[in-house]
Structures are given as structure tokens and as C-alpha cells.
Length: 282
Length: 292
Image (cartoon, chains in turn blue, green):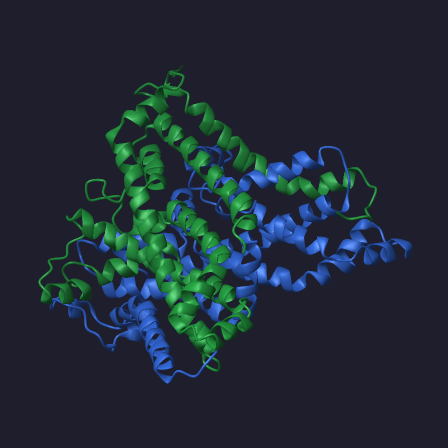
């Protein structure tokens, strides 16, 4: 702060409080709706304060689900989402840390071409080439499987670039020392590179977990069997089904449950989250 | 570049193999298929395919629906970008003034990043629900009859608000980082010279923030064009009367629901070209040119 201006400070605080209220409004409304019974929505407008049905609604969704919409219990869908998010995050980190190691620490023919093949995936978000990608996965018989949910999404140029940047900042002297001590490439990778990039891996993991958890279109297309529904994709099927018969309290309870894990990750690991966000965009 | 390297020739290929295989099978091959299919046309029963040259692209160019989708995408992307970046910049400036409370405010502003676009869509859909939603009730008191199910403008407003809301935390974090990187001495010098807060913002802070602003501009346009599928699908599904049918949604709809593979593939190719242009802009201009 340059100079003391109480008026401006007050204005700044007011702006922030107002901003936070606007940002939190939809979630507050959803939370309130999820604590009411089915009849409370008939009166015209939704109530603004929580009602008494919190435990009842949430346990019904977690354990039983909405039988009328053909979706499995929310607990099952959350588990599917968790498996998918973990597979995507771990898979992405694993393949990109290996390929970044290859690109930085080796010289081999066609190295440039390999690098470009990876780079070009930056330009191909899955939504853009959705029809042919779906065909490939269908031809491989990967519909309705965790492999089909996660593997097509784990190739990523951003993660490879990030690790390439990290490796380039690691001093050559370390590599030389390791080689003089007789360490081969894999030993160097395991004992020096991986430990040195631990925080980068953790930061990236936070971002990728959220990315994986929030996938929508891909699981919607790949899963036709309700055993593999993920929660973010399942919620839409639920909302569609209840449109005629408004069970908004249960849909909003599901929306809350779909938000809670990634929001906890962001708030709980805020430092790593910010680091990951800034690094992946370089 | 590394001076010290390992000499193995086979090992690097083994290390690269998983990523290259996945990239080839799930990225390059489907992209190639899209390009191939964009030059073909299937008959009604999917039995015969004929090579039709650029017919699919010409058909797109002559289709009022596609031109409408282009226009809708442009309006949508610009509105989301302006709304979200404007609000975030305001919030970032306010937090930048804070000393002790900056962390708490930041925490309270960053969490929407974690909400899935589809869930964000559902939340706002509920708030704006014409029969039970709270916003239509309040708007009604002011004499406005909100109905995003039949009114095109209302539907566009709804998807813009939902998409911009989700992006606020991202923009806020980058603006805040940008603001904090500006040396305080510059603003102090200006203050001593008698420049007030508004003058300092427009003459010092905002110009120095321009690399961040341009970077976010590109990121937000990419976000609005490609990552908002969930918002659209969870709320308006492109309606009413195509009013929110953005390009990525149309690719999906024509390919899966309409089963018009040739046209969908041609649209995919156009989109890939668009992403290519945006990526080049991001790498070429944003990183280097816009610096003071």
C-alpha cells in the first residue's frame, strides 16, 4: 500500500465481501435446497435458509440414489469418479515424467519429431475430435471400462513441458557426479530426478486430479452401463430425469457431493494448487 | 540444453513409448480420421461413402445454422472473457491493497476453480429456474419476465454467467500474481509526484499488467470456446432455437445426435485450425511481444 486512504480501504473490503457473496451464492442456494424436503419447492420460490432434511437427503443419495432416473447410488458414482481422477492424474504424471526425461537427457535420431508429436496434442482438446476418438475407443472395446474412461485422456503435452522445464533447471554437475559414481540413467532418474521434482509432481497432481474429476463429455459418451457412471456426468442424467417430477433437493444434494472432493483439495492444498496452476500455464 | 547426457539409444524410445503410443492412438489417428472423413460423404444407410472434395466445407460455409453458431460462439466467448476478466481484475486490485486479510480473501475466491463446468451449469440453472428460481423471482419484482427456456437473450445470459463464474478464480489468481510483481517503488514514485490512485492505476499498474492481461485474454477465449461444453449441455443444450449452440456443442450434436459424420468431421477440422491459430498466438505474441 502506497498511502493510507481509509475510504479506499473500506471500498476494497466492501468490493471483496460483495464479490465473495456473489461467488458463493449458487453454492449456498444449492446447499439450502439440499436440506429441504420435496414439498418445500411447491410453494413457488426456494427458501433461503437450511431446512431439517440434511442427513436424510444425503444418506438417501449416497446409499440409494434416485431409482426413477436409472442412476446408481451417488456413493458408487463418487467412487468411479475417484478411480478415474486418480488414474488420469497418476497416468499423466507417469508417462510425461518418463518422456520428459527421454527428451532432456538423451540424444537420439528423430528426437525432434517425437517432441513435435507430443507438442501437437496441445492443439487437440478431446471435444474437438470427439467423434473419431469415440470410434477408436469403441473399436478397441474400451467402452464401459475404467481404461476407456482414463487412458485416452492421459496424454498431455503440458505435463511433459512442465517436467522438461524442471529438468532443464537441474544443474549438469549433478548428472556428472552421478555418472562418475557409476549410476546408470535409470538409477539417476530414480534417485536424483524424481526426489528433486517432488513438489512439482505434487502440484501437478492437484491440478490433474481436479481435471480428471471434472471430466464431463467423455464419461457421458463412454459409459452406457450405470456401473461406470461418474458423478459429474451422472448428475446431468439425474437432472434430466427429474425435470418432469421436481426432486431438486436430491439433485442439489448430488451437486454438493460432486463439488466437495475437488473443493477440499483446492482449499486444503492451496499452495500446491496455485503453484501447479501457474506452472502448467507457462 | 544439457551438456551431460546419457548415450543409450534404445532406452529413450522405451521411455517415450507410452506417451507416443497413447498420443498416436487417441490423438493423431482420430485427428487424421477427422480430416479424412471431412472429405467423404456417407449415404443415408451408412453403406457407401463417396469422396466429395471440399463439399462438406462449402456446405458449412453456406449453412445458416453454422454461420449462426460462429456468431453465437463469438458473442459468447467475448462476453465470458470480458465479464470474467473485469470482475477478477476488480477483486485482484482490492486484494492487492490488503495486507493481513489477503490470504483469507484469496482462499474464499479461488475455490470455484474446482467446480466442474457441468455442475456450475446445474447450479445456475437452478438459481435461474423460471418457476422456482430465486433470480427470476427478484427480476419479476423489478418488472422483468425472465425465461431462458423460450427467450434467446436470457438463455445466452445464463450460459455466460455460469461460464464466467467458473473462470473468476483462475483470472483472479493470475491478476493478483501480476499485480504483486509490479515494483512498489514505481507506484510510490508516482504518488510522491502527486498522482492519485485512479491515475496511478491507468498510467502505471494497467500498462505494466498488460502481459498478464493478454495471456488471460487468450486463455479465456480458449476456455470459452472449448471447455464450456459441460455448461451448455447441462443447461440449454444449445437452445432455444440454436441461440446458445456454440461450435464445440454443434460438433458433438451433429456427430452423435444428428449422425451427420461428414459435416461433423469438417467442423472438427475447422476447430482444430482455430486451436492451432490460438496456440500460435499464445506462444508467439503473448510471451514475447507484449512487454514494457
